[in-house]
Amino acid sequence: MAGKMEAIACFVHTTPILTSFIELIVTRMVFLKKDAKWSLFIGLLYIPVNYFGGLYEKSPVYASIGYMNWSNKWATFGILFGQACIMPIIVYITAIITQRIHGFHEHSMTWKRDRDA
Image (cartoon, rainbow, N blue to C red; front, top):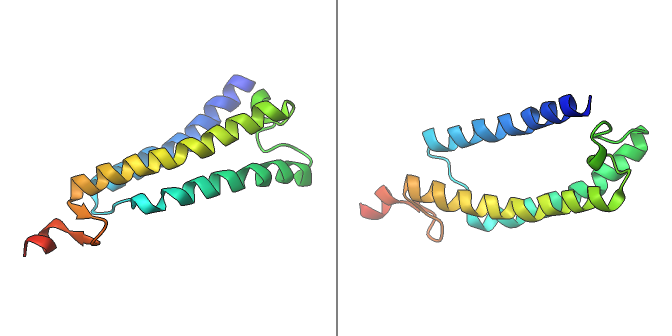
């Protein structure tokens, strides 16, 4: 059962990421490098919310995934902490790529066509 739950969790979390990347490519939306810190903050905030939410509901959020159900608190904490540390890097790299693709300059908050005019 755990394999099926992991596959569902992977799908549920991967699909929005993929659709977001497609949207970033086909629209003129860009990430801002300065906002990467917020993904770290939210990732760190998620750790106690996940833990206490499981206590409140009397079932861990990812109950059927052994390493994510808080049965081994250090393993679950380590995974969530690692995720919180990796996400700002991903956001920062995504900001660099989307700004370069769309010709956006973050410091002046202008598009290339506006700077060239």
